Length: 193
Image (cartoon, rainbow, N blue to C red; front, top):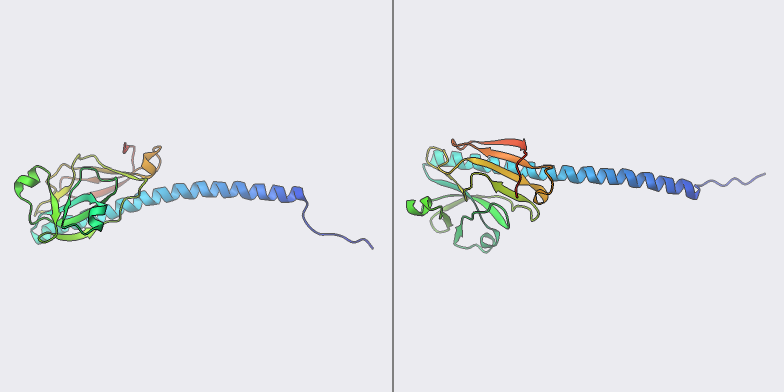
């Protein structure tokens, strides 16, 4: 009787490994693209929720409510004063607060800041990813909601670019109207750089 041996030849094993490698590389490319898209969409939807909250808080409390980027390290250190910055990304975190202390002159010069003893911090968003960019086309360092819920700053679009906007893939946008309403636009042709 002949002894039959069962197993794979080296050629069969190499073909199988090559096929698995090709399928894995396609899956990895697709999933990283999907993760970028989800990160951009999730951030802008969270920003939309915070803008809507700021608008409703301003209207219901008869107070001035500010949405602006502040330096992440200053917030982490629990500084008593957090100045609104002009860039919406680059080690920034977005906060929502009731502005009780700043004078009209400071607000007119866009020198708004959160002062811990008197202002009320309402919300703090997640920090923007280190490789991502966020641009506001309204050229403002803040969104200021008056007591009617309207913004008194220039309306515009928030454009979120994952991975520093390399390529135009996965760029998402959120628009802010003069009435203070935020609308998620989805895919955008705008650039962050």
